[in-house]
Image (cartoon, rainbow, N blue to C red; front, side, top):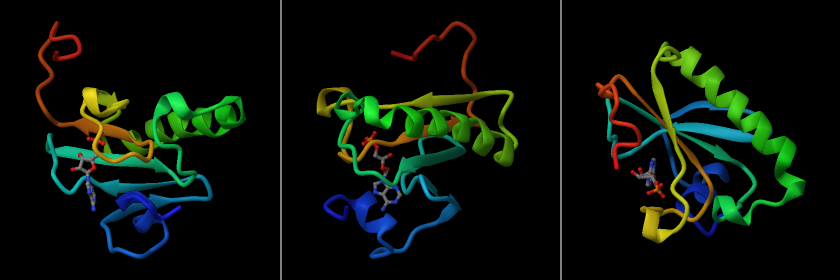
Length: 116
Ligand code: AMP
């Protein structure tokens, strides 16, 4: 559970700015925000990358998506937010414990698509 920084946060081994926690997941503020609102929704199960998830994780991942909406509502950004999952180092993943970035309060230009 605690090989990555997120595993250590979930295990309570390092302090964090925690916004939400339940049996499945934890939501924390990103330490290096890329938008005025930037939080991370992290499943407690240590799945390294999205592609490492299996059918066994289906229900938990579904709950995680619903929870992302709840968190957006809780933060008052449910009208405009972006959900990002980086899968693999080549896509910018730096912490190999699956997590969803919730980004908001940044001007997402109309038509900028994925911002790639
Ligand atoms: P990714 O690049 O998709 O793997 O995202 C990892 C994210 O974790 C980055 O946005 C980091 O700023 C963030 N991060 C790394 N360490 C911490 C930490 N101790 N607390 C909160 N966020 C962190």
